[in-house]
Image (cartoon, rainbow, N blue to C red):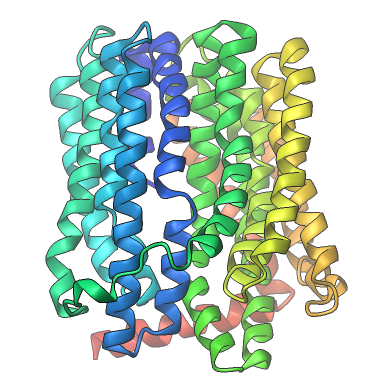
Length: 461
């Protein structure tokens, strides 16, 4: 999450909006082939491993069947993409991005997520991201170094996936060749592939359609910078989902439905608690943050960031309902229906709004699609999870966020754009938001603060 804060200002000035836009568009195209490689396999694998995480022979069988299937789909996708690349204008850039498909072939992150072994993936990500940052500052010096930048981003992701294989022997056994049936659950995998396709439509198609409709790499460059910052903030909110999916799956398989419901309401409250200040905070500091962070020529990013900030709440909520509840509880068909509706909303709005508003139109379409999914999913699960309870969980945080937003609006008008002033605004906003939660004695906030303090004291002792 911190990597863009370190590299984005540098890359914005070295590669420019044009170079950033070229990379963004190419990445959006290769994403469709990555999608073909992964299908719904990662989601399926993580879920199935969570069911048998305490059974060595069971998880070994699930792993090898799932991985062999992923190797087959990755090989097909890689071959198709290489052929496709030779017909493109930026052939070298496209071929470099083919490494992303090889990364899927080597990916076993889903296995460790299903096992709830998050420490290994965290350590891997930290090391790889640090190496990636060093690489960028050493080898990306001018606007002509687009290929070098593309190689760095793809290569280190590949190395990260390869590194996890060294941990596998501790968790799985070899199985007999006759036990392999990689296509046995292919129907289930396909049922998870359909929503994955739909999700990709409104997370990647934006960039593709901006490039096709506007014919401007600059518009894609502005959009890429804004979406990068909003998604960075979003990661704080949806990171809980990575932990919750195998936990919900485990309790569901054990028929502990009351525990599933309790965890779900806590997950919604977590999204409101963290998502509201991040959303309102980004809107409040955008005009102060963007000018000094990205430099001259990126003024349009301010408006884009203010719109895309609402993705934090929209995606946060539908991530809880969809990924953390519907998928682990084997309601993937319902999940599929909702994301297909969202994809259609996004495509239709993109087709209209990008033509008139360019990247701003794509931002509005993204937020509208995610909001539609969030609302539809909550309506569908209303018999299991009360919509009124979900909304009631947000009251304290909306009140604190509204007061914080008003204060930031007043303060930002008095401060010139600078790193110091942006930090000052962040501190002011944080103090107001969390201060109000303390004053009104918000139980979720106070309980978790006490829990953190107790853990820290135990570690020191």
